[in-house]
Figure 1: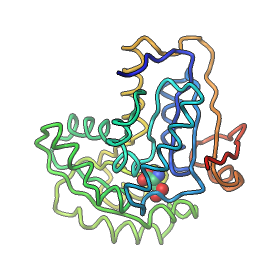
Figure 2: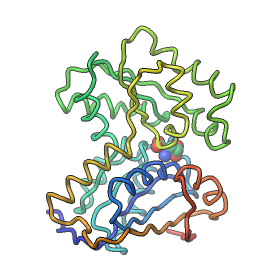
Figure 3: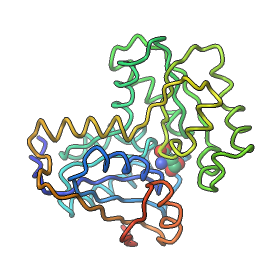
Figure 4: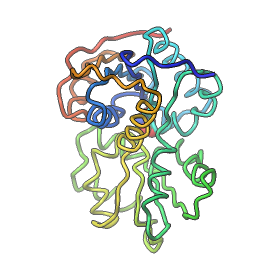
Length: 271
Ligand code: DGL
């Protein structure tokens, strides 16, 4: 049984590092009155090249941390953790838990006209075939084309998303979509929204890009409304940030991902 959430309690959002800030940015926009606790596991980043067992272990430590902070719901902003750890986490906890795979799949299935969908993500996300499985679970008639783009994350973190190097790398990965007739591309990694312009130009300017922050944000909003636990205090919510490695780099790069400065970042060790 899932514990009944209380409206004024915060929502936990976690990622392997700072990429999840692109998700948080949209959650804050969709749910401006909610308080969030953002957890970036910067000590263990990247998750994208790690095994399911390892990512499950890290994710459990983070959810245990959230439980001590009375979170009314938890968003797994990290695509890799959503793809390879969500099922196990859902079986282990009785709190409302939101992954980023299912909402983007449902949205793409609803909107695609050609019924051909592309997905890009980290090595572990794509290798798990979680997106394809999620379309199957939905009994969707869409064909799914998945491509791992592991070099995008370091390029983005280097601030090179819009350079000739990025365009070259994007072209090399994404040319496999040629001839597939996809009209919808799921950005299946927290970092990719930062590189959206380069990605879109490479595949096709008319391609619909799907952002996990938006799709999970709408799903979460509906859930909170239905369960009568939206924060209706009328004042703007606050966000607290926790990271497992030193906060300087998170602070420097993070404001670019979040689109604003972060007031207060605390270093915390879960060991
Ligand atoms: N946050 C990860 C994801 O969305 C990307 C970075 C990593 O590999 O940890 O898949």
